[in-house]
Image 1 (cartoon, rainbow, N blue to C red):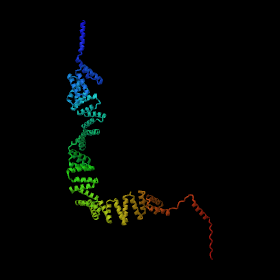
Image 2: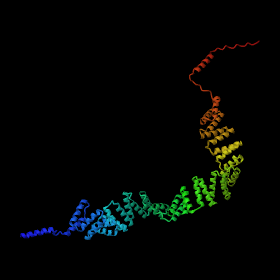
Image 3: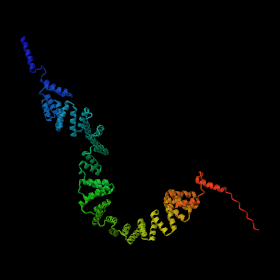
Image 4: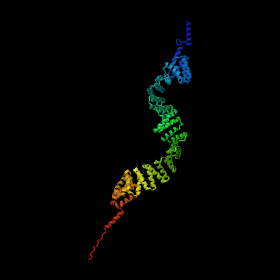
Length: 624
């Protein structure tokens, strides 16, 4: 009996020593290890303990290889981790977490086909949101939008604030043509992350698909401000602008995107011509620049660009465009003429004259170039050359009064007065209503002492333009010189009626009324004068003079004192005031001041004189 007991004890010891488990064999230990690794804790210390337990339970099994794969992955040894996951699955293909983790690593290194299979196998055993997210990204890339949206939605439950998941979901919705859902999802993202460029660009695409291009452009402009170096943004904007027919702005964006050759330059040229004809020279220039960005060596387009710049007032850029066109195209009369105009604008008369001469060599019939060249000669005092150019112009247009007028001015400046008179008279003959020609002719008549001729021309000027004050002043001077006072009166009266607010007109009319001894009318005009200009010294003086003549002493004194104050250099007001004081003033005022010493003496002397007794005169006796 004792031997039997010893045998049993030995068997028990051997079974323990040899790993006998009495119903709990090695296979059960490995299953337990797999259960452990399927449900590893998120706590690092606890997870480490679980990993060690799994290694202890089944050191050569699938779970142990899974744990080694995790550790290699943590160490950044991706290839070794992949090999360990594969070994774990070779030992037990049902270990879903090994499938899923292997799928994640394969997806990271771009093996998307195998990764999608492994991730799907992983999800069959465990609904891990990481597997959903990785598989959704693969499906989105494969344009399987509906499946991608499903997996993104599953991932979003675990990662509600994960913007890549939310944007991925929006992209999948957009691909599945769930546009309103995509817009709502993107609005949620941008409300929290306004600088999220990916979301903003996607929302622009959504708006464009919803046929809301203005909102799409607004989104892209916003994105461009936040990230101006992003070429994709500029390319997207350029495509929208191109589709809308806005070629010039499209080209700007294509240039920023580094894709300037996207549009046929003929489209830009056509748009530039349209904008130029509409008077929108800035946009025309943009279109022509866009065409040249695609194909630079186009002299005709460079000339169009120069025209647009010139019309827009961008002279330096126009000069550069024209010069480049000349270098490509060679001699061209229009190009030289335009360069001449631009140099003239800049005040570079020598360069301008050279350009005009070049233009005339190539295009002798260019009247504008000849006229401008003549004007430059005139400004520089080269009257002979200026006259030659105007005479050439008159050969072509002898009936042009302006040309005769300008030639007359050249002759006059060159002191060729008979020739100047002849040209002015021809200009007047061709254009009787040309005021400038008549004024120039009248002025030359005056300077040459031909008063009658000047008067005739000035009268014609007034006939054509009553308010011409220079002509009226000239006629007034002539009337005074010829002592034609009735004519003078008419001219002055008309002047005061034409310019009722001009104090000078009323003052002059007052003088002629005074000359005609119509003092009441003269006073009325002088009063209008000072009413319009209270410090009109001559008007105040004249008014005081007439008030004095009428015996209105108080009014005369006030007017003359005001005149003296307004202009102390006038001689007449002090003289008239002195006359009022000495001859026309009332009795001096009585003063009650206490008498001084001198006054007392005078009073005493007078008193003594009063006390002197005068002896009565003796009566004369009559002679008998």
